[in-house]
Image 1 (cartoon, rainbow, N blue to C red):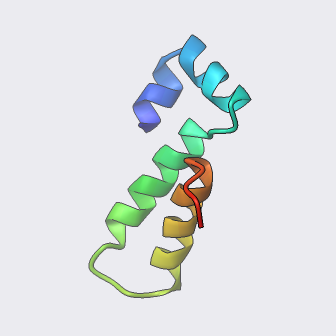
Image 2 (tube, one colour):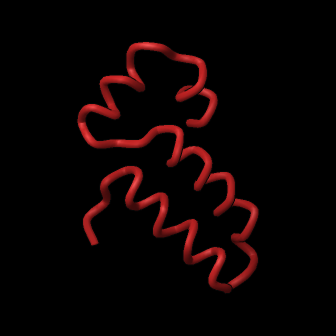
Length: 58
């Protein structure tokens, strides 16, 4: 998702106007994947950030 957000021109602009954050989601997904084996505050923070960037309901 991060490569998509940085490589494409038009689609990320449209997604941001719709309220999504493709770059933030991609960065947070990478952070979350690096912390999957742990149960700590950092993993929770990345999980929340992904949800906000992709507008998941609470």
